[in-house]
Length: 221
Image 1: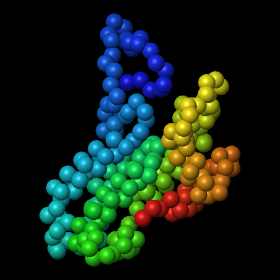
Image 2 (image 1 turned 180 degrees about the horizontal axis):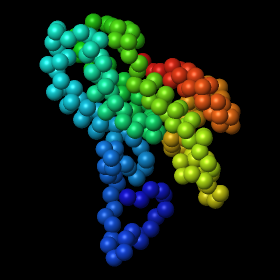
Image 3 (image 1 turned 90 degrees about the vertical axis):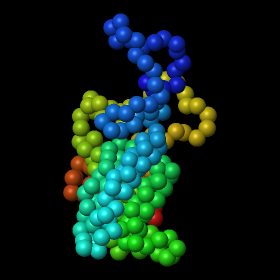
Image 4 (image 1 turned 180 degrees about the vertical axis):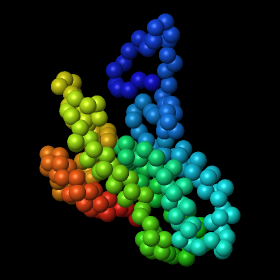
């Protein structure tokens, strides 16, 4: 798989073996694409997690298990699988909608309420004492950023988010969404610049507070 805009017909080889070129492939249960988008991977993951949720229907439906226990099972089995590696996603509005719809479907099934009952998503979260997946993903992304800020400039993760091309020019049109731009949007909710965030991250306790504030403000219910 090639990433970038350069056009070339030169094959990629390892030794004498020519590698197959693909648009996407699965690695560690995450779908990697040549454009870096997470949309396809998130969609596939939600389908898989939905199948797991279906297999647990006897648990969700029984009256012999307390609601709090069901929610703990959901949070420990279903949710972690749905947002695995989400801190590395370049999140889009489409992904946020997918996550919101999936989570509400699971919670409403457990509560045995439907959209026709006219119960808001916020009320569903209050009844189940849960956070929206968008909040959780934003919190994870902020935590990852904090770890990266503490790294040496030569480390790959630090270099990847701070490197700026010295040559070339951007194509016309709206800039493509990247993890860096997603994180900058997080910082905008805190009225904070990149340099200010890098300084704030030196205080781990303060950064945890900022991460929680960002997650709350990034909530889209």
